[in-house]
Every structure is written in C-alpha cells, then in structure tokens.
Figure 1 (tube, helix red, strand yellow):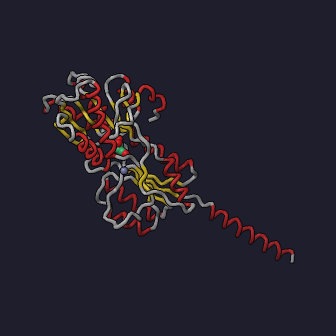
Figure 2 (cartoon, protein in one colour):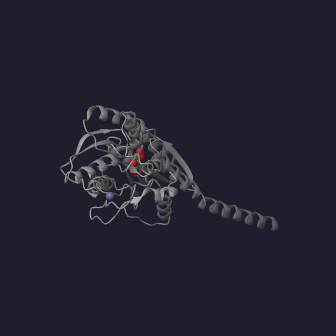
Figure 3 (tube, rainbow, N blue to C red):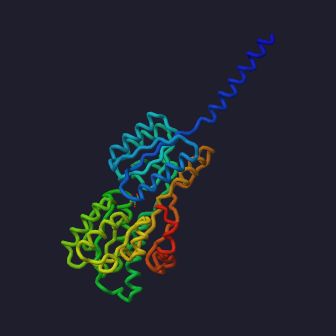
Length: 335
Ligand code: GZL
Ligand code: ZN
C-alpha cells in the first residue's frame, strides 16, 4: 500500500512540475533587422536585442545585410522554427505581400518597428502594432527649420539652393522624409531643391554623391541629408573641396546620433531632426501586453525633437515647438 501511495505522489509531482515547466516555457522572439548601415541602425539593433534578452526571452536574430531577399528568408525561417513573436522592420516598402501572407497564416503575431511595409491586405489585422518615426513629419521639420533659420537671419527672401541626399530608395523613411520636405518647401519658391540623389543612408555613399553635387551644382547653399550618416560623409567631401561645412554650406541631417551632435557643437553641421532608434522597451511592452490579452493602437510615433547650435528655431507647422541646443543634450546621447 505504502509503495502505491509513493508512486501516486511522485506521479502527481512530475505532473505538477511538468505543467509549471510548460507554463514557464520562455517566449521565443524573432527579430528581422535590415543591416548595419548607420549608427542609428546599430543603436536600434542593440536596444531591441538587449530589451528582448533582458525580458528573459529567447532571441532569434537575423541581419539581412541590406538585402530584401534575406529578410524574406528570415521571416520564412521564423515561421518554420515556430517562434512566438516576430519583430520586423522592412528595408523597403514593397514586395512583402507573399511572405507577410505566410506570416499571417502562421498566426505568429507580427510586431512592426521603424520602417513600415506596404501591403495590399484588406485591413490591418496582419500586424499587432507599429512603433517608429513619423517620417513625413521629420522631412517637414527639416524644411521648416531651413526656412525659419534663414528668416531668423533676416535672409528669408534670398534665393536658396538646396541639394538633398536621399535615403535608401523606396524605403519608408526615404519616401516619407522626401515627401514631408517637398510638401513644405513648395510653399517657399525661393528655396529650391536643385539636386536630389540617394546616398543609401551610408556615409561612404553620402560622401561620393556630395562630391558629384559639388562638381555639378554651381551654387549650393544648403545640404539636406535624410540621415546623419550621409551628412557626416558629405562633410568630408565639402572639406576636401576647400569649403567650410556648417558655414559655406548649411547642413541639416536626420536621426540625432551623437556624431551629429558633436558636428553641430563644433560648427560643422547646423541641425539634426531626431528619429529615435530606442524601440526595445516598446517591443517588450507590446509583447508583454499581447501575452496578457491586451490590444494596442496600430500606429504609435515616439515624441521627437530637433537640435541645432543655438536652439529657438520653430520646427512644427504651428510654430510652437522650438529647437533644442545640441550642446545641452549631447551628454545624454548614448548612440
Ligand atoms: C529611420 C531608419 C533609418 C535611419 C537611418 O527610422 O529606418 O534607417 O534614419 C537608418 O539612419 O539607416
Ligand atoms: Zn504617422
């Protein structure tokens, strides 16, 4: 009889442990990342991966090295592995319908960050939540800053020639920032974009395209670079041409990375429009919430600012938000 009780007790124990072990079975979160093209991207990768690991979850990470086909492969691998969640930022806006239909069919929840993929799906049930910059607004802020900067110098009526370094062609930030900038600058006919070409968000390509602008454009007053990395490359080209970046050519970037703050503080750059890469806490918040059965607003943009040398330039369409002095915030810049 004693033996029988011992057997029943040990069975019950195994059952209990078994279920608790199952319940505590850690989540596996997969992250399809674009590549390593900029300081922004590196900061985004580090922040999201650290947050997932700090949450105690298993991380499955894939770096697509700037190739869309690698992201498609990664998404398919995630489905095969049966991960619990997929975190995804799309290198370009198009070409995702087929693989995102497969993700939808797998019923693995999709958490979108950073760059948004266009799809032809009938509704937005294919993703749980998006968190990332408002790229159209970021482009508009750059244009508003340029106009208001010249106005602050009493030079708002001058003929101002602008050259633009575009981001990765057809990526969400390139399409959005270009549109946002165009939609504002069109209201100021004396501010003209005289050349616009992609530098693919990298400093090397930004430098090369700026070299070609310097050879082909007679008078360049302003450079608008759709990310700071390209602006930093362009600064090298401007110096090599014997010109003073930040003075002979006004330079506006986007992201708000530390190297841009340093360039502004040392007078080689004039402004950067912030686009935060720090999305890890939001990813953990959404996944934790989804685990508890919560739902989330589909599109959420972080609060973002604009930084320049002296502060005080208006950059929102109602003119209420004013730029921050980069020197006052450089200490907290970790990326
Ligand atoms: C913006 C992000 C862009 C950054 C670039 O959210 O997708 O990609 O602006 C990065 O620096 O390469
Ligand atoms: Zn938006």
